[in-house]
Image 1: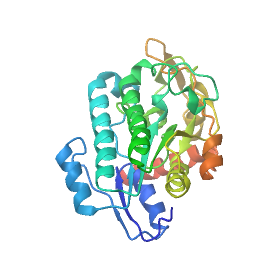
Image 2 (image 1 turned 135 degrees about the vertical axis):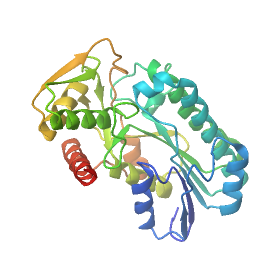
Image 3 (image 1 turned 45 degrees about the vertical axis):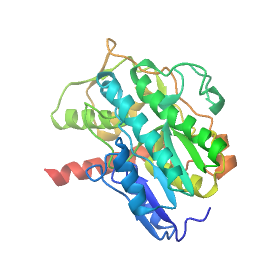
Image 4 (image 1 turned 30 degrees about the horizontal axis):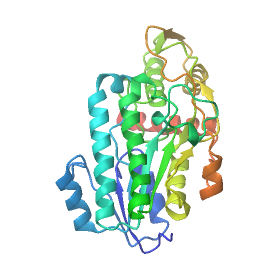
Length: 314
């Protein structure tokens, strides 16, 4: 569909993914973009979702909001991760249908996939088992949105699409050691260790798991392409095609930051899912998406941004 002159509602529009997504959407010359803050509307509450859609009457809804975090956050807050994500997804899909939204784009997660899957992973593997335990409730909640989107297309001819993204990274991500994903947490740890002349940095697990990461600008491009070109409610993988071990990741980040101390692996902590790598051929075939940012280039840009931000705050 043509985005030009359409009114677009973006949930999560002020977050890590949302901010660059809004910039990319404006390039398509929409009539307007609405990006409510969580302080204005609580998307886990039915009345708030109804008010949001009734007041703004969007043509397109891109649901990018979510309660997200790394392994530690998901281990400590499984009920919150499940409840808030499943409620947001359920209400946004349902009332987008009620208020006759022309196109709904739901942003899912790699965490919806089973713990053990063939590599590279095709969309057909989504129901082959339960997600990795440390993020199971979150993963199931995000999976339910995909089920709902497909059901609403079948019963109501609701034009909804469902994207499964690998872990994102880039500028404006969360950088701390409490609720960040692995790249943000590592950059934070190595930066501070380098600054404080620490002799060692302790990281979780044994470094053997592999991950696939997608630069945030590639993710926003995928979402816009899906909004314009995707015409199926089947889940669609959105990945970069690059697989990297956590150990390699630590070496790349520490080198880019200039940290020369020891990296210690705490094997008492969980590794998470053993391997992650998508087969994203459907995304290229059905919506014309292929990642453009090589991992080392994306990491360099991210660390340069983080260094600049830290320098400005000193």
